[in-house]
Amino acid sequence: MKLHFEVPGDDFTRAGEASGELKRKLKRLGFDPDVVRRAAIAMYEGEINMVIHAGGGVVDVEILPDKITIILTDYGPGIEDVDKAMQEGFSTAPDNIRMLGFGAGMGLPNIKKYTDTLNIKTEVGKGTVLTMTVLTNKQA
Amino acid sequence: MTVSEMANELNLETLVRGDQDRLVAGGYAGDLLSWVMARAHEDDAWFTVMGNLNAVAVAVLVNVSCIVLTENATLDDDAAKRAAVEGVFILRSHESTFSLCAKLGNLLQ
Image (cartoon, rainbow over all chains, first blue to last red; front, side):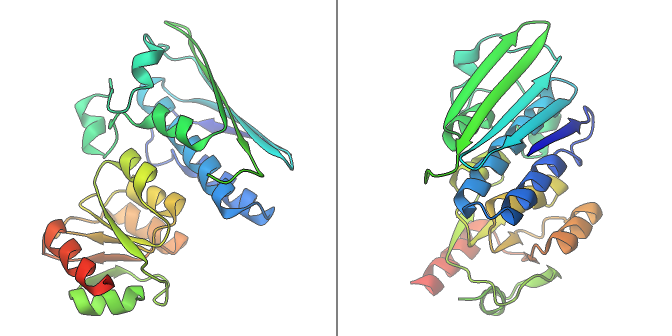
């Protein structure tokens, strides 16, 4: 099964809709609750990143019996230093974002924590593609 | 302990009613949403001052048993509506996060 979502760039209130829908769909399909949780949290972090940093983007999800693949594509500013961005606590989010409870510098580290593979393709000034997979037979 | 039992014991105000029989297995305190997503467990009571839509989304994703707004923190209208749709229980207290967590810790022992 394939799913496609548009993530609007300026609307925090709608970030989370796509991951919420993915969560409901995976639940209905009968996936293990832990798999559902990991996939939904990873996708939510990705959505929030796209809203904060990239002016939105698109998410493509492929659901197979053994593997869930989530691809987040944006045309934002790209990530200057991926190693730094992967460190817990490193954040470039502005203060107004922190007031909402985001900007803890946990986005990418959380995605890595909750997925089985994570690939980051990014180019400064052009955008970022995050490809992540969650294996369905694996417990966290 | 159920959410409604905890609400009684801690003298919490109910802002959005969810499943009263939902179990509270533990607790988690925090206001940074990604941190909460990384560390909180399913069936935790989540103590926070974040009463916005994103907090409700996090509560759903982590599947905590309820949100407890501490120090009389505000619950946004759109967050209350979303919580009602998603079945997220939201409670509130004038007490601090520390004080409520200490009490819950004793209750859960």
